[in-house]
Image: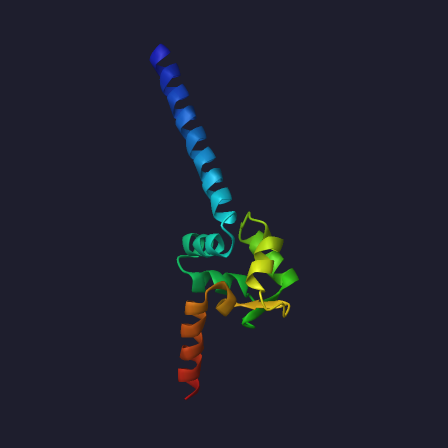
Length: 118
């Protein structure tokens, strides 16, 4: 019986440690601003583009502050969304697009769209 207790304690301790590390990792990503947000999208959706598609449900190519906040919360992003928004909306036009989340990905998406139209 003593062996069973020790095993149960070891298992509980291991699970608690993993949960705490996962929470610390999530907090760590959210404290990295835009770069952490990109890492969050990459980890949660497999790519930044797939993450953007999850954000931009209306497929308009851009999001206003309210829609951005709502989408971030619904996908489980735990960071400071208002601070993230200020970083993303550097031109202060009240909208963000894939270009502001990741300029390189945005460039390729734009080139792809142009190629489709030609």
